[in-house]
Length: 255
Image (cartoon, rainbow, N blue to C red; front, side):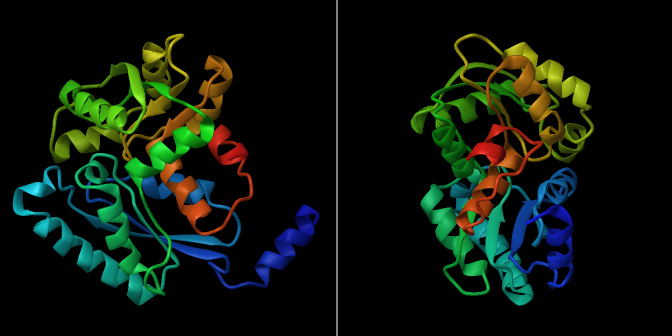
């Protein structure tokens, strides 16, 4: 089908005729919405809600996290999303992946529908790319990077080099993540690259890195994975949408 015919065909369909994706993001996040709306293919709509990050949800037996999730999942059931994504790197590391995914499945129009979360999506992205050793670049503190490296290691991914930007913790720090420029992110990625790293991981959903992925892959000669792109890739694949998306790196274009 040529491009003009595709445009006419899609114009005859209602928005979200292929899939409506509901995305939960942290309250402070201002990056995920523009990035996913730039990447989404024809026929996909993306619908957002916000909730606080639960950094240690086990403290109360996950009660506060589950209560917050119930509110957001009820919103998604009401508007009738087909796929649910919990898009927060740190937040999605706080409890077992299967527990989180099973909870998220309650939010689809048909209960038990497709659901993904960022950290397990990143692991799946590395598996698809055939990657076992990565360099980690984030806006986080060194402590958070080490925590993330430990959990990656427990899932078969070795972090061979890591660097953060040490903005600290809290909402003010989170807002700073979103203000890092593309040139700064490219320099940050270059600073962790090394021969041992099979890929670069730009971690954090509030880190505006999607626009630099393809340039970095060309320059460094290896895949570059970001939190947002991995989550969106996993969301599409969970919904059976497999067409290549070009301009944002190998993951979306080839897997």
